[in-house]
Image (cartoon, rainbow, N blue to C red):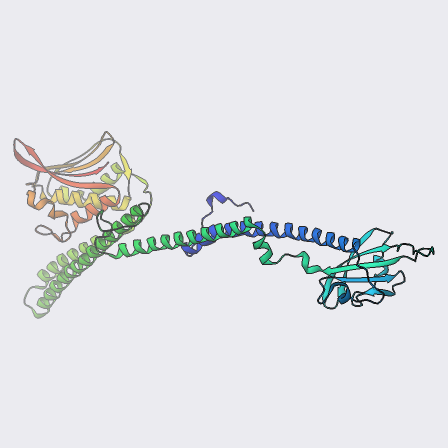
Length: 455
């Protein structure tokens, strides 16, 4: 399985630990490799030096008498073992602790030196052995028979100690000092980075987090993230507060028709009003409560739409025609002159919620247009700005009331106050905006234009 390292990312954990592992790990791995190479070099040098010392010891064999021990050769606590034996292994002089030469390690020729490993007591030693021919004596007799000479030193001498490694190599000491200094720098940097993150976290909990001058003093690379998260936090807090107020208002608005319905029902039971009149009023109250409930459901759908990604493209002409057909009885009841105009047009959005928006705007236009008046829907595409305009011949809107009409539960006479608020929220969730304008002619208001525009 191939691994794409360019797309690899850590899966989590501590940032400080990540910096320490990924920065100090390679550093000390390199130090370990340098140390290992130096140790190998020192071992090879020590091995060559020890073998040369053993050769020298064999070349400068001390004058000994038969049966002499190491103490007589080298003094107390010898650093090496000497042994002189006959070819058959009988010891003539030197250490009895040094074993005779095994048959497999015997010297092959006079004057040649052979090396092998042996055990002396509890130590492993390096042994050099040679076959020596004693010189002829002065009485003219023939030379003595050859003797086997052995010299041994501890094998541990070939491995350098820590003091020898550090004391004999200025370069290795320099490497260790530089590695320790770099380790200290990396630890300080890792702690500083962790401190910056903790400071950023504290900054987000302070009032005013996200504003340009709220007191953040961390690195500039983190400042945009802190500001962005602070803005998200403020936006979330505003949304929560708006939802809290909305739920409180919705609860109050739903409680009111229920209380009215209960009063109407009690009046009918007690005989204070005719049953037919009571039922008619109760039907109106139920319709009002149902309309409020439907509008609350539409708001919940808007919140779902806001969490969606890219929206599909929908046919605005088809949505407008469906809304007009649904409200056609209201248009006919007031004998209004209606017109649907404009080219084929589409925009990103949700068909069901766009239909709700169109019905709300048309219902308001029908409600405010006098009988036998005119209204209509105009679709237009103005240099990339797609608009749906619902116009009527109503009395117009006061400037002080226009913005308040988009607030929840701020209805005019006869409404529940959610229609225009839902329209604005639906439009914003689809990247559009809703605005209301008084249409003027000669300085006089002749109607209202409700414009839904996609930039």
